[in-house]
Length: 306
Length: 103
Image (cartoon, rainbow over all chains, first blue to last red; front, side):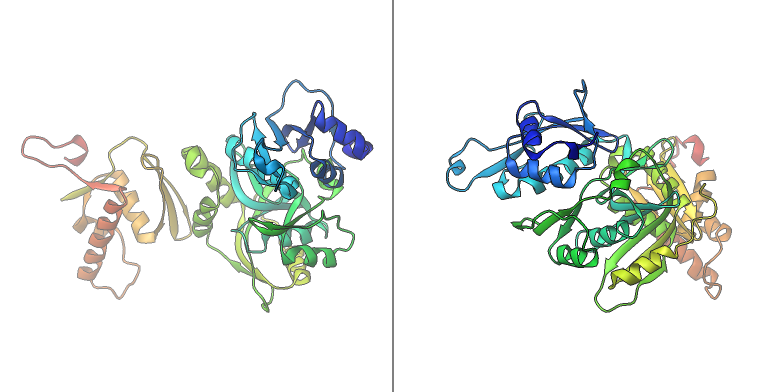
């Protein structure tokens, strides 16, 4: 059974009363809220996730509520609570679902220190994962959304989880965050893509989320070998081009994009050297998604990783 | 004057690819990217404390047209930079005391 078996009314009731367990990759989140737009977002984007009943344990206990202040009557706000406490300032109520997504990212990036966590999209084909680390604005999520609509498996749009013991890449498939022009670009690139309604005037501009492919959810327990580390950058009017990057330089750039590299000390260094050792490293510039997909299709698997 | 790796057991961790090397300093938590010459200097100093003049003989110049004097100067500059990054230190040599590693 998955979440799509619940009607919106049943889902809203569960979220409001006892809360519900949301299983995303290896993490279980207990979520409670009475905010209708959150129930609608979960019904739309988490439809293919397993419906988890009555667990004794959750990694994260999260709720979204209306803060008890005067704004409640004028310009309503919502707050994200983790273990009953707000790690962030409240946001306009219209941003409830994006705030849930950002909050869930924060839960993992701030607590899951049994992984090396890199700010990167991760996709997989043929057992090998391509890690795409990049700062905001580089086109990482747009490229990721296009690739998972053309046969690549989504491991994560935002957080690459590298297992510290064996260096395997652990999936965390969740809705893909799209911003500004990327929303229309992906909707036109893949008309069947399910995308939530646009929310404007957020701290990231206009945002929407794309539903992850069902197959990526079904395979959420299948880890992958590191295959490639590719730093994407969207540039207008350039051909799609992979440029080989020295492993040492790739190492430093990945470390710059990691949430907990410093915190992990020598384990972080060893895990990252393992990732870079196993991967071919490239800079990638592109302007056309079709050309980018062709370039990724032609990637040769590393010879010695498996 | 001899130079040595910062004096703590297992403080530095190396990994090299092609002609470059990354070094993790577990005391500072910093990671550095080093070129071939700098990483060769560190590896020599890891074996034993060494003077700049000796290092200039042990570590070949990357530019073959470089004179020996220029190469020595380059080694001295690199030693100063590695020292500033807290990866190496001068051996403390006094009349009364020489740490075992510097004798």
